[in-house]
Length: 122
Image (cartoon, rainbow, N blue to C red):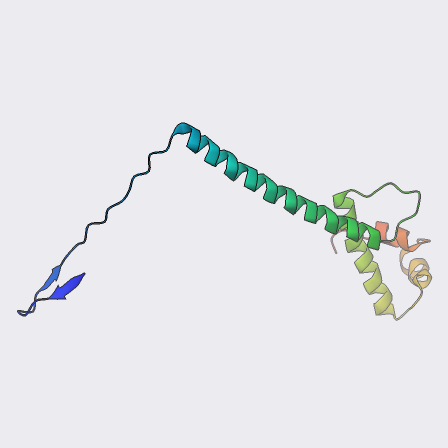
């Protein structure tokens, strides 16, 4: 806190703060660490659960043959990227049927083949 003296000099008064030093037992410290770790683990489980739900929803959206095994996470993302690319190609060409794009541009026979054959750099 600063106060001005009548003679024009500034004097700084410092107020002492009293801090209470908490003395914690080793058991309390350990319990606190366990609680924090449990909360962090719960947050991570929730995050992974949400991520897996989103990937599963994406898998259901993508075209897939009935006898194909479940796609891995990275395969799902790559397939989604390729599927979006194929759909953009269909829209660009102004064609409503994917067979025209399949035969003319990719030499594939199904939409799934189009998706799998797309370059991953796009």
